[in-house]
Amino acid sequence: MFEVAPFVPFFVVAALALFLRGWPRALVMIALPLLGLANLWMLGEGQFGTWSVLDFQLQLFRADKLSLLFGYLFHIAALIAIIYSLHVRDTLQQVASLLYAGSALGVVFAGDLLTLFIFWELLALTSVFLIWARRSGPAYLAGLRYFILHILSGMLLLGGIIFYGQAQGSLEFGYIGLEQAGGWMIFLAFGIKCAFPFFHNWLTDAYPQATPTGTVFLSAFTTKVAVYALARGYPGTELLIYIGAVMACFPIFYAVIENDLRRVLAYSLINQLGYMVVGIGIGTALALNGTVSHAFAHVIYKGLLFMSMGAVLQMTGRINGSELGGLYKTMPKTTVLCIIGAASISAFPLFSGFVSKSMVMSAAIKNGYDWVWLVLLFAAAGVFHHAGIKIPYFAFFAHDSGLRAKEAPVNMLVAMSIAAALCLGVGIYPQALYSLLPHEIAYTPYDMSHVLTQLQLLFFSALAFVWLNLRRLYPPELPSVNLDVEWLYRRLLPDAARGFANGVFRLDQRLRNAALAAVGGVMAFVTSYHGPDGALARSWLTGSMVAGVVLLLGIYLAFGLVN
Image 1 (cartoon, one colour):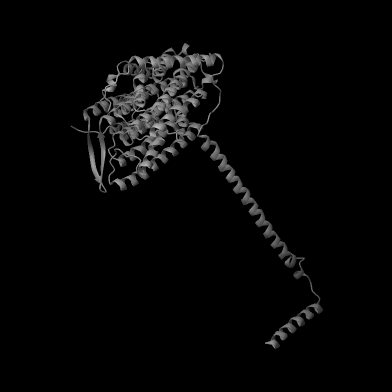
Image 2 (cartoon, helix red, strand yellow):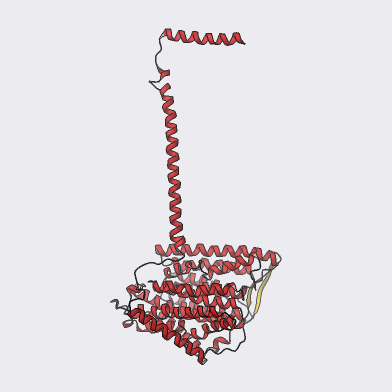
């Protein structure tokens, strides 16, 4: 059998897309993930592409249940995103998106850390063009900040690989741990891409600035690649439990006050990543299955929400909640599809989020992390507020903004419908997903206590939203920009740099003025003696001159007699 690494077709079609136009390009792009899925299915578990470099074994392709599930997921996500973007006539976006998806697959199936690093850097390089493709000033600056942080991640990864390889004598990509400096550097590199607290603002800054279609691609790959890498290299690392708990909670408060609805979804994305990181930290079979299944469900329903908001932006040119509302009248299909995504992320029974998120929470309570379970429960109520209710409410139902936009293009509706069908399919028949999970366990999400607990949570959360709105206590949608940790490098550091530069300029000016004053004093002194009116330039009488000469001669004779 002819073996083709999963990333290769994406790179080949990206090269073809440079020359194809119109329907031939669209046809090839749609066929790509379908054929890629078939190729991946035939490859199955195994490994190939092994060679030796400097006494290290490198492996281009290594597949097991963990990497295969992410491989299937990335092909499905690529198919949906490609269909969603068929109306785009921008070669830059289409080529970059294919290279980006291929790079994500390269990371997932990398059997060694050096191969991982190569695709890790390609992931950053290709994804930034989906931000710059919007061709606006804010998009350029956001893309630049995004790229700098991801280059930092790559540098940490490379340094960690060097230290880890020297210590272990191997570059195999397996369990890494935090027992040595190299492991910590790799951990931090993965954490930046996974949007750990204090490193998360590349996501909330850049994703809302990308093109409507570019954001759909971005939401599917970068952070899920990091989740995969953490699950492969750091399962059972307890520190991740606490990091994940923070990630699940803090975005809620920013999402509630945020006006840009795509930025709300970006914060919500970090919130959902928190569940996955907690599951990796717990590290049991149930927890890791919960992480992987939640990653699968999240890519689909978050993509659906980003697609619905992208359709709103595409058709209205606006995305702030303060400027939208009443769109259900002219965009009813997009409204229904958005509600399906909102129900999925809120973990309503019969939707995909319900059957995946519960696994992580069950693992937390079974392993004695009661307070973590409470934190995740609070986060679940919060996500229903800002993503389950706020997104569809302010985009489609709130005050009538007077916008009468047309329904989204057919290809957008088809892509959103596929994602919505998957959200319902996984929620109704979760065993189809469970059968692909890396660990064999028996888990039933639809037990009476879980269903009732979740329904009560959703009911009281919705009641709180209604009460807060009626009492006018819910934060209004204001035309403003909110900064959190990024204030440090978007406000504090630039202001400090400007202050330092101004201080240097002032000191330089003072030194220049002092130097000029000193030179001026010397010149004045010299001029006072040698200038046209100076003492040495005056006319002397002959007698005075003779007296001077006699005086000098006398002094000379006196010194001569002494010697």
